[in-house]
Each structure stands twice: as C-alpha cells, then as structure tokens.
Amino acid sequence: MTEAPTSEWERLKYTPKPGEPELPPQIAQFSNKTTDEVFAELNRLPFFMTKLDETDGEGGENVGVEALKSLAYDGNPQEIATNFKNQGNDCYKAKQYKNAVEYYTKALEVDCTDLTIVKTLYLNRAACNLELKNYRRCIEDCKKVLSMDASSIKAIYRAGKALFLLANYEEAKLLLSYGLKVAENEQSLRNLLDQVETKEKEITKLKELEQKRKEEKQLQQVVLQNSLKLRQIEIVTTKNPLEMLKQATVRLEDPADYQSQLIFPALILYPTIDEFDYIAEISELSTPLEILEIILNRPKEWFDEKHKNFHVKTLDCFMETAAGGLVKVGKKIELNQALKKAPLFDNALKLYVVPKQDESSWVSKWNKETALNSRNS
Image 1 (cartoon, helix red, strand yellow):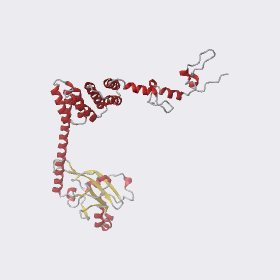
Image 2 (cartoon, rainbow, N blue to C red):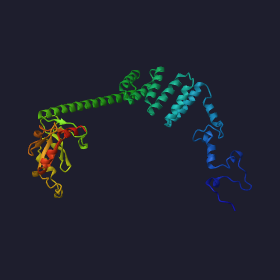
Image 3 (cartoon, rainbow, N blue to C red):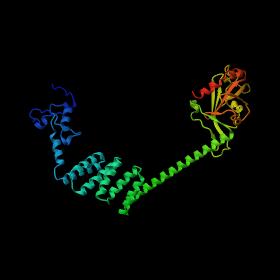
Image 4 (tube, rainbow, N blue to C red):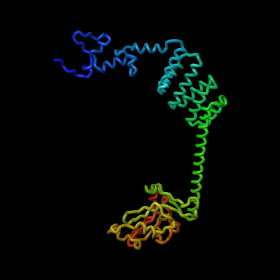
C-alpha cells in the first residue's frame, strides 16, 4: 500500500511510474531536496533571483552573477556608460529612483569622453535626486552640467526647482531669470519663477502681519501698564504660583483703551476651613459683596456644620498688602479702590474670606514675615 504524501512538495514532486522516463540530470539534482532548499538553489540563478546571492552555496563565487557583472563592463567606455544609463532610465521610468541613481553613478565612474553622454547622466541623476528630495545633490549635478553647457534649460530648471524647495528664493530667482534670458519663451522656467515670486510675496505678507501683531501686542502692553499705573495697581509675582494662576492674565476690556475696564481672575480663600474658590474673570468694578453672592449661591445642603457661618452677612473680607500685612476690605467697595491698598498676586485678585466669629483669632495668627517668605518658596 502506497504511503500518503507527507507534504505539498511530496505530493507534487515527479515520481516515475513503471515504463516512464527518469528525470533529466539537471532536474534530478533537486529530487531529494526540500522546498526551501530548492528555492535557495533557484535564487542563485540570475533569472530567478529575488535577492542578490553572490555565492555558489558552498563558499565560492556565483558564476552566473559574475558573468552578468562582466557583461555590464563589456565594450568601450561610451558603450559601458550608455549601458548603465539605459538601465538607470528603466529604473527611473519604474520610479525606482535610488536604483537609477546607482546606475547613473556607475556610468559616471566610467572614463567616458563623450560629453553628451556625461551631461545626460548628470541631468538624469539630478532628476532622481529631485524626486528623492536630495536637493543639494541635485543642485551639484546641475552645476556640473552648466559648467559644460551654460544654456542647458533642464539643468537650470532642476536646480531652480531644488533651490525653491530649499526656500532659497533669491538664488532661485537669479538662476531662473538667467534661464529666461537664454530661452525667453521657455514656459517651464516662467511658471517656476512665478511660483517662486508668489511664495516670496506670501512669506513677506505673513512677516508683515506677524510684525503688525507684534507691534499691536507691544502697544497693548504699554497701554495696560499705563492703565495700571494710573489706577495705582501693583502686581506681585511669586516664585511658585498656583497651577491655575500660571496662565493668569490681566487685560483691558478694550486693549487699546486704557479707560476700559480691567479684567482679571480672582482667588477666594477660606483660611479657617482650608478651602478656596476660583473665578476665571471678574471686573475691577465688581465688589467683594458681588463676589460673595456669586460663590455662595450654592445648594442648601452645602451649608452644613462646616459651612454654617458662610453667609454674606456673617463674613468679612481681607487682602494681603505688598508689605505682607493685612487690610480689611469693605464688601461694597469697588475692587479698583481696594487694589490701591493691596496688590494683585500673579495677575489675580487674592481675597481672604473669614467668618466674623473667627476673625480675631485668624488675624492674630497672621504673620507678616511668613507671608513674605511664602512668596519666594
């Protein structure tokens, strides 16, 4: 009874039946090899190669590959260079630009004296490097062409394109303008020059807008600083501001009008219960009373044992002075008046809110030196 084949290779391989011919010797050598071994052998044959294999499988040279290599250099320098050039052209058409560069480079390494061939090789390699974004190499190849033929439109165009893509607009314009003197009606040069000039105008416009924005910002900053001085408002910057205050800003409602309202954030601290609230923006015309009415507009459940004394009428407000002391702030006074006695800290209002019954105890514990030291710690 015949055993079932153990693999796909066993099932497909040729086994002669009685009366059928044996395999020819060229094929018979593969009859006892695995699929991987057969493919390894085939890969050493130039027409079957999927990757370069320069060995014979036993440490020697691959005769087929060496023969092909020798054919590549068979002929006079012009013929050899042309052969490499043609292979490079085939790779270029297939968009295999790196391979094309290698063939053009091999051709240039041959001592070819035909300047037409040499010029074409540099031009073709420049085209590949342009596609590969090797712009400086493209420019170098174009320079070599122009040293041989100062009127080469292709060299001018490709070098101009590379300069444009490198954002070297001034040189690109000079080169393309020169090209249009050589070939006044060359539309490709005209179109590229138009692109360069359009891009330059766009960049100039962007720079002008950026400069204008910068000047406006500087002017707004001057207006803001002057408005703070006129209002006698100081800003103290601490060494390690709270995270929420790191991006805090003071601004005018109309940045160009120093008389418009100042807007800034407010940090409302409840030191007796170690809690706080934060309001992103308030006006200088607001009062502590209005702030308290906003933040105490809470559900009834919030006013538990801990917060039972936190009602508008049972609270007093304080601010810290630049010297580290405390000043009591009337709840109906506008903030711009209160800020003449106490500064903004890190661009924000800092308002201490304390229940009246705890006021004396809390104020007595306030330490000026500790307050000043905390700004630098």
